[in-house]
Length: 360
Image 1 (tube, one colour):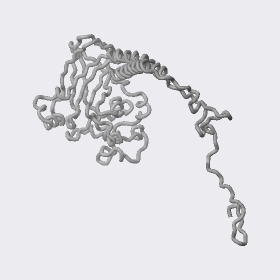
Image 2 (image 1 turned 90 degrees about the vertical axis):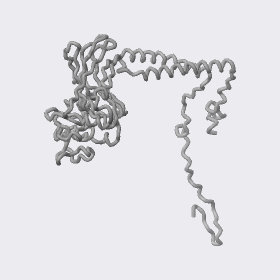
Image 3 (image 1 turned 45 degrees about the horizontal axis):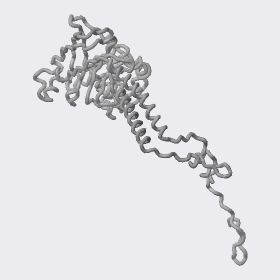
């Protein structure tokens, strides 16, 4: 057996067959010995890299901050100021006010323009403590239904899937909770300021996620007979979903509990000191979860809206790199260390056969 023979006396003769080695065949690729760049980080290189990063990042941070500071925005929180005096005392009073369809929800507000605001002026609504990123909320939608495809089950949309045995279109909690506050603007001379509602949604969402032949049906918010069951805005049964840009904007859920969504665009300039009269229809219920509502008017720059984070981040990293470069330079000048001979590094050593010592 195994290449050996047995004599009549029971003595095993011959030599066993050598077992095949499982050791993989040697190649420079499998042993990670291919030629590669192996930089030696000397003090000079380290100091130079930190200096270069600092010199590049600091100007980027300054430019980003200047662009952000050029953005003019007006932020007005109205969830508390738009409550009547008898509804500000307790949470129950707030809920009684917001859920009563018979109360007047109109709230006049006056805004003053601090700096020149060039067209277009974007109108946003901002919500705080609204968790659109909740797993159950995000899943409560039927993408196939929104696109106009045949749907056999609406189980993901529960509890807003059927009403009186009829399927809801669009179904789910996201559509049901559509923001329904509205804003109307006018100048101090009572001249109406038009708001453009076209082009506020992402073009890809309009073209790919919502069908042109899909119309709202059996939508529960169209039935206002039960005030406690009111979710959000109503949807017109004659308007296809791909043309309802307020819905499309809302259906793109936010990643954080504090977010802004575009409501419209004002395509006229405002000068410093101008007065803007706003009539807010305060009917979206954020009082049940102690949320906040804000109206935001903002211009934009080539970097987008007002956001100092990127500028501060670039400046912080740039200054930190300059400081580290100076510290390393002082240490190197005061306590220099002689650099060893790089030829003694393992990847530079060769044996008599011209191969790496690591292999020999």
